[in-house]
Amino acid sequence: MNLRRWATNSPILNEVWKRANVDCRETSEELGVPLKILGIIWDNMNDNLTFDIKQFEKLRNLEVVTKRIILSTQGMLFDPIGIMNPFTVRMKLLLQTIWELGISWDECVPSEIKATFIEWLNEIEVLRKFEIPRLYFNEVNWESVELHLFSDASPKCYGSVAYFRIKYTDRYVTSFIMSKSHLAPLKKLTLPRLELLDALISARMGHYLQGTFPMLKRENIFYWSDSQICIHWIKGKADDWKQFVRNRVSEIMEKTNTNRWHHCAGKFNSADKLTRGISAQALVNDEIWFSAPPWLLQINVPCNKSSDIVDTELNCVEEERRKVVVTFQTNIEPFQLLLNLDNYSNLDKVIRITSYVLRFANNCRPNREKVIGNLTANELINAEKYWVRCVQQTEFETEYEEIEHHKSVTRSSKLFSLNPMMTEDGLLCLGGRLQKSDFNFYEKRPLILPTKSRLSQLLIMREHQRLYHAGVSETLGKITGFCAEDRL
Image 1: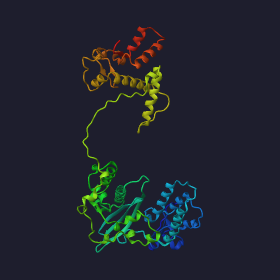
Image 2: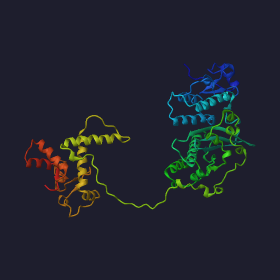
Image 3: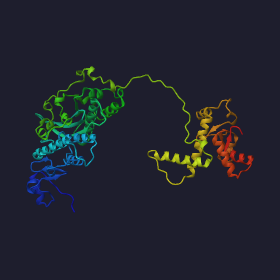
Image 4: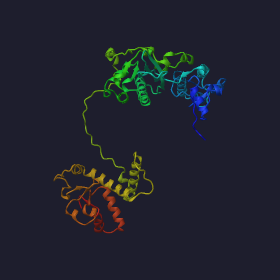
């Protein structure tokens, strides 16, 4: 099966394909039905795009309207470039209202919501004859191309819309590209913050379009907003503001040239329609939405310079990062142990529990290989070392810090006579000439443990039981092969 099938808006090329037996699609006129391309109807005779609204006809006589029906209906109007956003945003706002009311999926919505939905549904018929040109450029002999993005916000929603501004020899032409809209979050934000969110949409959209259209240069991408506070943030220093503003301004600075951000009056801002929604008839008749504000057709585009904006209008104290002199006070917190050893009488049980806890902590870390199954010898050894390290850091805190920083312990320390040193695992052990012997590691460097610690008691008890309750000398000899107490 040949999955390739050609379609064209050129009658000449279409005839050539037919004579060459190329698998091509008929024109809309020959088919007698609309030609669908990627979910949008393409009239390849006139090279226009339109929307499929036939599927809405079955919804005209609805008696019961539920949240499920409204959501599925809103998704029927496939609009990948967002040219219908001023009309469809009304359904987004209605769905948010339904969500706030806590209405279940198959529960009938209140009468006022049903009336709003039916009114919106009836307006869709206006879109039946609505068409937009497929081409951004009707002529190929252009001199330069600019990208202009407008952003606006309201307490309910915010969005951005992008246009081409094409320069020919004797005139300028504008063309709609795409738009994006988002509902304001249920957690209320201030209007300046919402304006910053729509500016971020513009920045991301401009960055995306620059990568899509190679002829666009960074210096030829212009951003427009009717929020002076937002522009003040973008043109200032990101570190002057609180985290919410700082993070978004930093991304905007990264993706855009801040010198290309300008202020425009709200009545000339095309994105204003994305913030409140309009009827289908008003959208079809709106030349500004499809062609951008008329002043973009002028040779010199009027821009409000930053010097024209009064500083007192830009004060937004609640977003300003508090400037303080930072002082530090160190509070030494007591060392926190995984378990309370006083609650256990078996050292092996403590080691097993600790091993599982350490394994769980390792498995929770990102980019770590997950360990499952029975405990390994290494896990048990690491758990035992953990407890030795904890006890040493707790009981020999000063000495541990001194040795850790490559200092000698003071003569007044009870560990001075043991010539303590630190292993690669961060454990204090006995120094001396035995390190040059052929004994094993712990015989050459016995670990140092305090006499009266609970860990020492559990260790002695374990070795005493392993030796079948042998005498003091045998038990002590076995223990000193592993550790050296500070008072033997």
